[in-house]
Length: 494
Image (cartoon, rainbow, N blue to C red; front, top):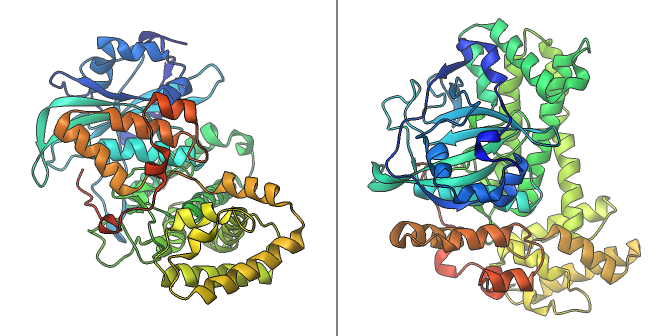
């Protein structure tokens, strides 16, 4: 494991040329301090966790000192925000320091979010709030623990200065790790500038660094689009299965490698509501839970437009038509695992349709319903029936479910194991997240951030020894969201 000064930095993105970025050093900060450090993320870049104890850690990642080998830059990108093209976005408050290669040869971008204004800042202060940094940090760990592709973060570094959003707020720098920071919007920037050569260069860069096996193929750009489509379909199928709502699926928030990217006002489903969005700015519900698969298709269409000089539009359309069946198959497979089933026929479809109608019409916690269902038929599953207004409806559904279980011939133990690997006991409920934020912001108490990070590293099972060490009350964290805190909505302001 390496010291800070020994990280194996390169920066391949800078080789694309100055049309793709602004070279800029981070702005210095006042008395940076460590809010939380993620040892699991440190392992990704081969960093010794003991390095987080050094005073230099906060100086480096707060922006006061440059890490040896880093070459910071703000990336150019644009994108469609709520369906409307915005030509002036870019890394207004973030800097890519470069890529660090770990001992296994894997590269991870290191990016400082909140490191001061760049030429893309449009007059804003270039900083990130502590509140929003905590949200992204824990959201990443929540999805990673669920096995969903996502960016990660090495640490949150606090800054002893106030910034202004709707009111004065504490600031922070989020140290984000990702396999790439190239977005759909990175390509769109050059489409609207009528610079197809830059798009070709960027596409070839992505192929070289993420799909080297197709680099010599004659139709490599078509294959690139196909793979981005498949990864996007997989990502959104994962989101839908666990009830995750991203909240701001703009094209500049879609990563080319299919990772969950740029966490804003996200949330996990409490009681099932397909029309719910945690983003109170989204008055039309464009990015509501049920719309996410459709928006994935729309965003891919916009990405495909940028490649039209490399792949015939009819061919791109042919590829795009595979999105819906690809998504449908992936989603059905994931939902089948949540039910401990494997046969995806018409009876399965009918079972799922009936279930979602019941969940929609009754005050049932989405996550805990599936988790408790694993106890059917001989365990303690009866409490999950209580919220249903008409008991006969849910009893009829359970009978239908029981018939499908019997026809597959799995033992109850085998089915329960499958279900408990697919249905988390713990999720990052917005009220739990807000509790951690309030402790941090109002009391300078960061213990709840650490507690949630540890809990969400493995959300599928109890870990008594770990829970005791971190004072984690499993029953509290696994409970339904209190009625008064259901469906919390948040602002995009960060």
